[in-house]
Length: 229
Image (tube, rainbow, N blue to C red):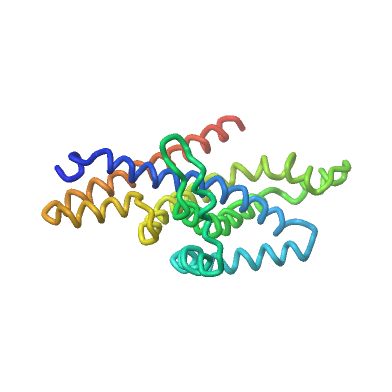
């Protein structure tokens, strides 16, 4: 374990980058997924079909292929994201690699977020929306004031599963220049082959802590809403 504890700052930095990828991608996926879900259940057929096509495309495309497209294909047509590197967050300078990873994870994860939200919307009785429209509310008001607050309770468990999967999917970024937890583990094992098992266990423990934190937060939120009812 000396390989990890002797370079504990590198270990923490790797997981810090993993958490950063998960948080930024998670927030953007939630926003994009919400828009996609609204389009899918909305009254505009063109938007519903476009959102359905997006969801079908990204849910059935391997994440690795999405990463390859964003990290390799886009730079070949001049989209490099290098202009973003002037931005600094504390002591960390945002890299083009980080942005590419966030874009890939967001495009992929938002499709699953959309379906999780849509399942929650479908769980709300149709009469609730009809009653809201009967008193003069438009589609946006019906969604914001009536449907989504009720759908949120049903969305929590599947959404937790989506964000747990997102956290694990950040490991793919290691193959595209991001020194997150999986890349850090590979670096440690390359330099300390005799401690390979210990390094793997400590990195696995880090992932378990993050995943359990998400699961516990989901459980606590779900319990709070049940008590509130």
